[in-house]
Length: 355
Ligand SMILES: Nc1ncnc2c1ncn2[C@@H]1O[C@H](COP(=O)(O)OP(=O)(O)OP(=O)(O)O)[C@@H](O)[C@H]1O
Ligand SMILES: [Mg+2]
View 1 (tube, rainbow, N blue to C red):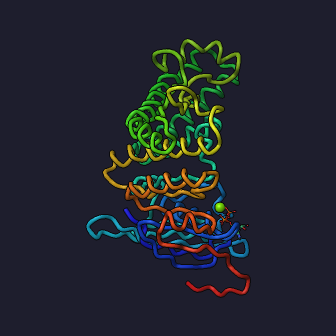
View 2 (cartoon, rainbow, N blue to C red):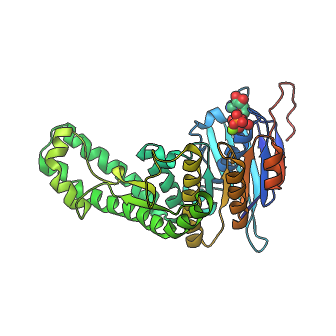
View 3 (cartoon, rainbow, N blue to C red):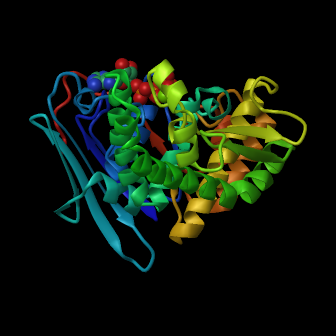
């Protein structure tokens, strides 16, 4: 899958432009020129969401109230898709070949492997950040994962409300069977994808970090089954006034044979470990989907020395996926990437609309 073109109008501070993309793309610009805005626009166009967690209305240029993104995606055998996203009058209209495109379908159709500047949080961040990272990959391959998350949210909230209201045990436990079923499914889907990724993660981390990385998955309950855990912990839940176990407590640890990454490795090493994890996970997604994702890395070289940057870029290029890499304008990285150069620039106040 290749994003062949990206057109943005009134997006963030960016100058309205139509960019042609190749397999290896290098987005260059000084601080504040709009590199992250360009990769955010690509993710927004393909998956319908901002990875920076910004509300959609903040994505229009601050002097405008609407924005438009469009582009063409090429699949193998010359099949192409036209995709567009318009935000106007407070409403988002996402379209694929002129038909409305839902969020779930967008995720399924356009798999992305996004490595943003917070990536070291994959090892040192909060468990909810790690779960989100993993879930984003699972969403690409397990359509029921979205529905299961919605059910989980509803059941947990109802069960917790019953606990807070001081309802009797039977009322609280009326949620347990459904909760246990979706909880087991969510956790199983996450563990399944991790298991399929282990070998690739080990291989890539050996190349980048010099050490093979493994992932230790911890499900959010200690008992054999989630149902058993819910039953066993009911008194505790009533005391602490919330459901204490479940997939909302799942976590995983990035570790090498001798140590955990978190707290034992430098920032640069953590970044390489986190990237190995993300790429390994993506290879498992690709194997299931039988389709290549677009790999997006914001600030590839930041925090890495020349040798690590070179290993990283060589590894990425060897995968042969479409790459969107951003960096500051340095000769070194330009020579390493040798890609299609896209320059980021900001709208000037006196600019006219060009699209
Ligand atoms: N809605 C908006 N309207 C106008 N300008 C905006 C909007 N949102 C962000 N900006 C501006 O866009 C500029 C570019 O931001 P961006 O994060 O894309 O730059 P960058 O090239 O990634 O910088 P860095 O190298 O520091 O990461 C910032 O100066 C920011 O203030
Ligand atoms: Mg940036």
